[in-house]
Image (cartoon, rainbow over all chains, first blue to last red; front, side):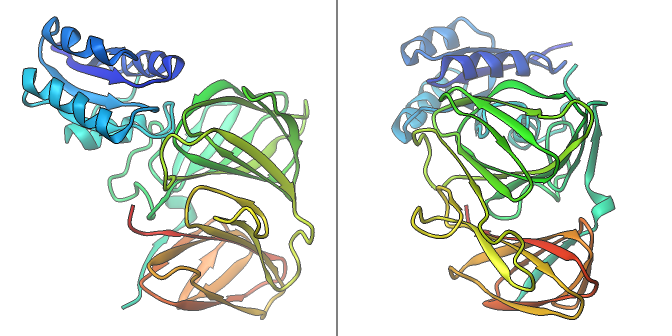
Length: 107
Length: 239
């Protein structure tokens, strides 16, 4: 199955790691992530199409805009969601709303 | 013109994990209903029951105002800011998750289940410094009147959060009427019946039903049975 590539970005390392683990439990999704904004461009260049950015906590509005701009230059069809809550509670709804289609429950 | 949405108790999303039984008023975890994502800034209203000795292990949160209201039993809280506390019926717990907080919530007892409401409200400001607070209500469930348990103001009655939200609890005898006036124009109110039955704006609202009202200035609620209890959550509708 071709997986949807997801990029998780935030400033809280533990929460970013948790979100990567949670996203990777979804059969259709494959996540990588970083807390280092300098790494985003190289992550984008080394990845096949990134379809979704998950913006986690600690980012300023300017940083969020910068991240979207960097990623969308390389992956123009990327969609973006602001994650709230820090864990699994809202994640599936946020992903479904951002992608525009139903994703299966995590394994 | 007044608007409303009515959620019957049995229409809520159900989750049974053995140790945890939960009813979700709004989409949460694996429960997804595109028609039930949030009511304004009110994003989560979970009606949780946790078996004795069990609980939520340490896990993180960010950017959310999280309010817990114990209904039966005692809940043991521990968090990454060094707080260790037990909250009981009549207490209100609040966490501003902000940039990130870790916590665990366990049933304090080995045998008896703990039942509590877990409520998440979107904050009006992202990335705030995390904070924890809990209070014991001075006049818990004052009969036949609404008691404020939450507001945006640290100096006001109850706990406070980073949002223009006001919560009230009320415990009423049959036939008693209370008038609620919206605190901030544009806000809506989600009324959740804890026990008994209320008449609100023409709706017959029973135990664990929820009624959302907005685009109105005030409304009356009338208890239909003795020992009727209600939680009113006033929140901004535009987020």
